[in-house]
Image (tube, rainbow over all chains, first blue to last red; front, side, top):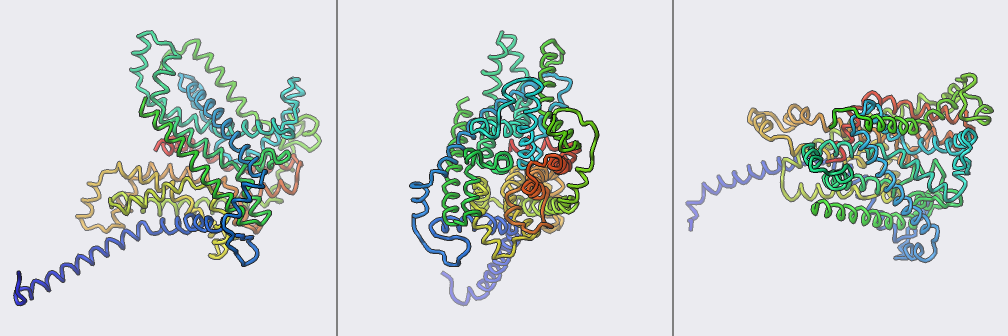
Length: 313
Length: 275
């Protein structure tokens, strides 16, 4: 189309233009990097790279001490599935614990939220009281409750003569299990309560008034109007409790230390011991990858299920 | 909301107060026994102390070197918080204001990492941390908190920034303000509500964290409050007189923090979860 003579000057101009556009683009990329870069860098180095390393190490015989890291293929995984009953026991314990504590802490949290949603005079004070355990870390809470179960319960038992308080709570498998559930629920239900209260306050009051005029009972109001309206809060609370209960470590280690006879050993403790006490890093990472898969599956299935119900409702 | 105070409300009030007292009983036990002698605890843990012994506290104060542990916890929590607020808010703003595939993929990457349990990352992280000289050092631990805290903080900022109108920024740009100027002078002050939420959530997490610091910090003088308390319990098992004093000292700072900021904390928690 164009002859050489004609394009002489414009070509230079467009070159300058593309150069300046390139410069502008480069500047854009640089500012993007300056803003996003630090967060991305820390995130990649601290989480993503170790995660990928973990996948690799789970196929090796790495023991943390010797510099030789041998590729062993699926050996670690086979070992876990074939002869590691302790790991499976810890998975079963953790799953049972999760189910029990998710149900109890949400029932309690929702109940407390309904209670404080009434026009109580002591409402603000009670909200503070129920929330307090949540600001203390699991480790210290575990120690506190160790004292309560061992000495406090015995004292209450002497005062009231109730047999529940005279049991050797942390010394028996069943009661130790429920002991952890109780402390977890005590810690977490105030948190759930706060989320449920926020959701309850968003419920349209005129809707409830209208239903009341139509003669609906409180129970129908609750199950047919309130709960369907605040299903998103249930999704969040279940997600939070499931993932917190499944990853339990601090509270578990300070309250029972996994005992008696490893009966209350959570998966997180099992992995920790495999790696940092038995020095079997390869095996530990293989376990931790399986743990990741289970947590990911549990939480996504749960979110998908409750989300689906939200839409239907 | 029902403005009338009926009989039912009164009944509910009673139930609430009873439940509240039950919730607080563990604290009662810990407090009263922390000022008793060892023998008195064994005789009756529920009884009011016959005399108040504060020697438990003085002993524990020295054994766990409480001022040191408190200072370590404070430094770690404060610097991690500042860093997380700076890097996450900047990244989130740029990502929201630069729509496109790249920002979207990054966002999904950040958010999906929240599913990864800490236990899955910790073993290789200790190896990598050793190579990068991050272990047994407080700055190293803080850098790790940057990495672990970014996803949630960025997620919260991201959601909030989407609701901030872009017009204000654009007019500032026309006035010749640089990108950094626009962000720090105009956008960041608008993010205050979500910054409060981010700081509260990160503070409660970092202050109480146990597993990461126990893996990273080995020296006794680097210990945070949870580490100092747990090593105390490992040494003085069943010595409840001193153990309870250690626990009271351990939980006091965070309870004071909560009581002072409870309005913000409860609001922040609710907001942080709903997003």
